[in-house]
Image 1 (cartoon, rainbow, N blue to C red):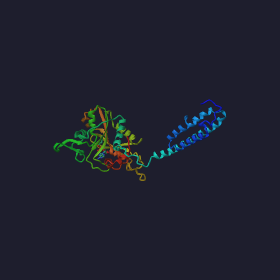
Image 2: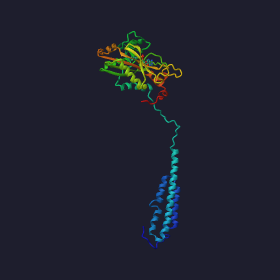
Image 3: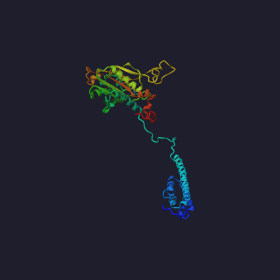
Length: 372
Ligand code: FA5
């Protein structure tokens, strides 16, 4: 800034001349009006309202004017700068509004468009329910055991106390594997997961607490409730002092964890060559809890208004099986159970027809979602 100079006339100082101030003001207002984006407006702000803008430089000259001329020049320059500042503010708001409106249009999301161009797959409900069933026993301390699907007849039948003329061995139920030249091979597609009982006892140190989820095969026609290929979950306990009461307890825990607390279970006498005594296990219907029995006004589709649902077979391991597996029957006893996984899925999830489980239509699988 120059020192005050009494002979200094603002009209003589070019930058402070009213016409010059008016020109600078107009130039700034025109530039502001022309700015078509926030970036451009930023440049305009620096050029016309910044520290080195013509009006800011003119403002510095005021101090050098004779005192009498300062007020007039100050009003003139200050007024122009205020107007420019307000115009900048107004244009800024206008451009921000325009940008917001544009963003709303450009970045709009059409929520009606299909959201999933590559749909996520889902695991098959048989897999997830089988894992859930097995997990409950793993939670009780059981290990998972496995065995081959193509199995020696000895494991599938003989070691399990099926006599040679047992009906299950006939061509009706069993897929026999042909040997060389079409002769007998001594191998079958396992008809149940029970041969893994014998394998587990032979392979492992006692005591044994295992569950065996696995694929099984029978010469059944595919219909609403049967499939030639299906899945079972086998359970086996061999330990000292094991009784039927432990079996009842384990089944009770399984049913309550899988289907709901407080559901009762019961056993009905049955027959399997490899357990003695043998039983069928029922659980109280988890949908009606028995309320539909004798009540035609409130029928239950899950239990057919019987109040109970059959979940599988079980029993105390026949000592002949223990002997076949080299277990000391004086010291050890055990129990076993076998549950059908397809049948469990049917009543647990209301699947009416087993065809749905094998046909591979993704709409069936997807309906169950991504259960882990
Ligand atoms: C057995 O297979 C015995 N191994 C179960 C067992 C194990 C008993 C341990 C005692 C001790 P069963 O033939 O009843 O039993 O079959 C068991 C379950 O498999 C049935 O309850 C049913 O849920 C299922 N199942 C049998 N055949 C088929 C089929 N063709 N399609 C779908 N599920 C089937």
